[in-house]
Image (cartoon, rainbow, N blue to C red):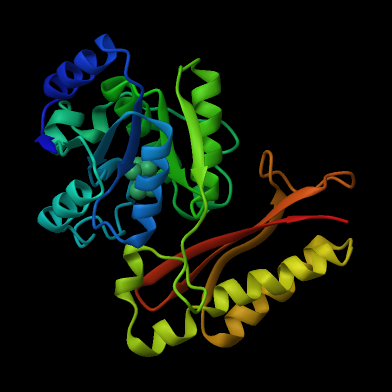
Length: 283
Ligand code: PAF
């Protein structure tokens, strides 16, 4: 595996592969790779003949009081993990390479509606930061296919929409969430949890599954399901940002005829803000 830090170097390598007719798969990450990322890497290997990963902790997607400065950075371990996984090219730019004018002065990409709800409501500017950096990374890497985890369900929806709206020739593939044995979705932010909080954290998945069971049983009142889900987490000691039942296709509140739904939550436990979701079909 080769590691590069400049846009010019990525473009040169990808151009050479393309000249050989090879299909390029891309996994954008913020590093601190764990088993959850390995599943993205495996999906990338199934979808392409050359595989690029980026590691960039994107300042634009963090709010002023969020964990940008403390976000775990483990570049050497990440490099080893990517090399072991068969990655061909690791792109690890610094902030000046991506935002030469500074992230506050860069052109931004906003996906109306989708980026302003749920995460967008509680983390203003977050989805815009994600949409902007992913657009830039796609312009740099020019992949045929890019892989994103379904744990960040709204992020995946935003990226699918921006790719369609901006006519980008990139196939977007969602990879299933990878969980610890007790159901907690893997995330770099899980390491902010104390042992006591870690023991409580699987309640998020349990609350989502309980809500999904009510949807599957045909309960029509999704507001009551949301309220019960949020209450169960609050009672267990979480501070809930949202617990929402939405249409899977566009994250709008469910219309009567909508069958494919997703239940999404974001809840805080100590210093950690955890997100998770479950997809469910109405009978
Ligand atoms: O999911 C992430 O790790 C990030 O939001 C992404 C897609 C790499 C953009 O910075």
